[in-house]
Length: 346
Image (tube, rainbow, N blue to C red; front, side, top):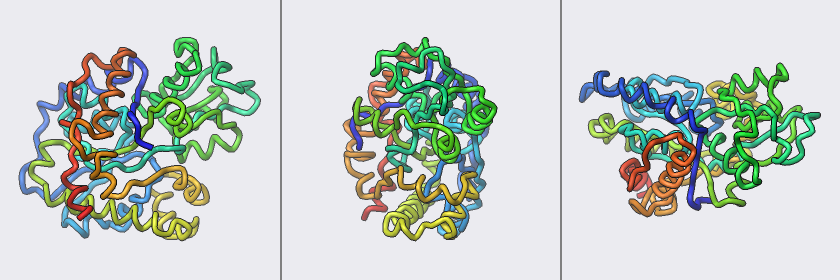
C-alpha cells in the first residue's frame, strides 16, 4: 500500500501553484496567539470526516470557531496555506511535495486516506481508446498539481507514451465534468464525486491502485497545518486528530451502515457535492489508516525514513524532472509531524 509514494503534476503546475502565494506569505498577518479560530480548507473528496464537519464535532471537542472553506484543487489549497488564508488544508501528496519544495511552512499531520482505486483514468465510450498508447493526440482533463496528474504521467511513461504527445488540459474537477458533458475531452483522471459521474458513460482504463501496483508509486491524501498555527495550537490539533480518528473508525467498524439514506452519507454528499447513492461505493475505493498505523514508520513515524517523508522526496524528484519545481529538499521529514497521531494512538 505504501511503497515509495510519489505524486506529480505537469511542468507548469507547481510553479503556478506556489509562486505568487510564497510572495504573499510573508506579508499576511499571522493568526494572533490565543485566538480560538481556524480556517480549514477542504476539497470535494468523499471522506468519512465530512460527517464530523456536518455535526460540528471539531467545534464541540475544541471550543474553536471553525470556518470550512471549499477550494477547487490541491493547488488552490497550497496557495491558501502559503498565503495564510487558511491554517489547515486538505490535499494530495503531490501538491504537498511541491509546496514543501517551494518553502511553504507546513507540516503534514494526518493521512486522510490511501488513495488506492479512488482515482481513475476514464475514457469516453466511443472514443476508440483501449490502451494508454491510444491516448496519443487525445484530450485529457486533469487537475494540475494533483495526485491524478502525477499518476497520469507515471502511467504514460510506464507505457512508453511521451506525455507531450497527449493533450493534457488543466481542469479542476467541476470543470472536468462540464467539459465531459460537452464532449470537449476524450478522457479524464479524477476522483469522486466527478469520477462516479463520468463513469456512467465512460470506461475505466486504469486506476491509481493499479498504477501503484505496477510502478511502486502510490498516492495519498493528507491534512497539513501551517507551522505558525501548529506552534500556538497544540491542544487544538490533538483534539482535531482525535475526532478524525474517531470518524474514520466509525466508518471502518461498520461500513455497511453507511448507506445512501444514512446521516453519515448524507453529510458526505452535502459537503462534497456527491450523489448520496454513489457515496458508499466511493468510500470503498479508499483505504483509511488508523492513528496507530499512521504513527508507525509505514506512514508519518520514523523521521527521514518514514514512508511519507520518502514518498514526498521521490515525488519532488519526479516534479523536478518534469520542470515543476526548482529544488528537492534533502529531508522531507521537516514537513511531516507525527506528534498528534502518536497521542491519538495511545
